[in-house]
Length: 218
Image (cartoon, rainbow, N blue to C red; front, top):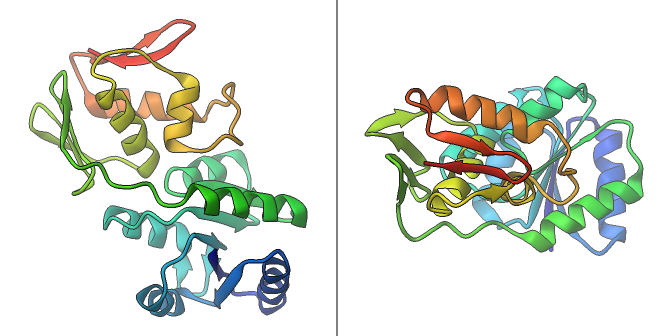
């Protein structure tokens, strides 16, 4: 399994390189975003460990742009920006988020989990239900023909809801679609995304809550 580490601090970059190699991963490192472009043009990765604040800017914006272009490599943000609002912003486009300082065994476990999961295969067809359309190949969503501008998490949750064809989707299933099993079902990250989706989908309301179960479209 090959991991790309993106970290501008030389000591931290070396420590991560040594620890991941010691755990059996193949590792490449980059100190800034131009090096990331070069690495991604050469190798396929099973996971990327990404510091957010880099000399070229916030790596969250970089990952978001890559996601919109169809990049599906699991991303773990490893950063000192770990207040709840920053974590929610990071999880909109990343797959996991770990604040500094961190416990090395936890980092290795999270990286291993993301590598085993691997990139999600793109769906083969456009999904439609209740006037909502999701095209995962093009990374586009629409309601009644109106384009929707969605974050990565919003897109993943909406895709799961549309795929269910109106049947209720549990909180656990929606969290699994957009995050991973390390996010507890009681976490409010899903509630934030559901509220954002309702606002973006507009009126009349099409996204409904089934108390004690989850959510559905219809």
